[in-house]
Length: 383
Image (cartoon, rainbow, N blue to C red; front, top):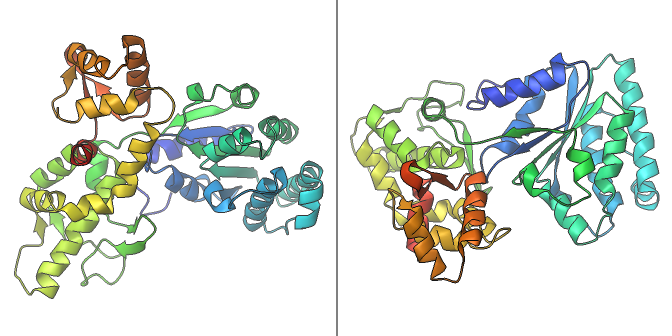
């Protein structure tokens, strides 16, 4: 599974059961809220399932602005498959002129190669799969595209798909999705448990800060990620981090990153002496610094912008809940939201959607609250 890939053992175990232990490969949809680690799961899947199954990873964000239709989508898939199985992809011109037929022939060639080399199969992992929804909605690729992919799966038991994205299967109600996902197994990726959060902080990895910079969560004394992490946390500090993040993996790593950077500045830049142990005071110091929320803005803005999509009233609900860290009763919530023109039916649909997206939770006595404390604080700052 990769020595430094922690926190998703159960998900990786599921994939291993579906892709290694079964008689044939099973297609899956890995879904969950923003920055929950879905991409890391797909990228680490190859290490988890062993050498018998090859994984071709395709990030639809990197496919560019699709202008040539389905041929361009299949071109991106072919490039990833080629890298995974070491078979040259078809010519671009052929894919653009006869995309489906060219891809079928290439996939047939790949399957024959799998059999000749005694490989168990191929997983085509497509990240950010909601972009396919957008392409279909924009009429850049035909509505029958997923039906076409499903037909390929029925023809080839050694090939399966792994889709990862934000949307749940329940939300993919368009008719053209139903035939494809009828036989696909859903895997939900949610918050990490408290113990796993501690494990991640104790075993830091390279942290990509919104793809702007990639830095090691380590002090200058550590020359390799494989060496022991020299900094430690007070138990109360670990509890405080979980309280702030609820085990949201991106935010957990962001706090760890900022804590280490602050320690390095204090000790190595300013020459201050201090214990190499992070305390509650350290955690609160980095959280109360406005730079922290600027660093995490892509996460916070992403959660907020998704609440503007789908069911009406989601952002209104979040604005009402933001001043209440302990939660708000349903009666008070409907009272405040109704003043903004939303009736109870709209409110219930908004609550269901936000709950399904792991943004809010229902507590005892029908109280509702925002799950991630840091998102609640960010939202308050925007109001």
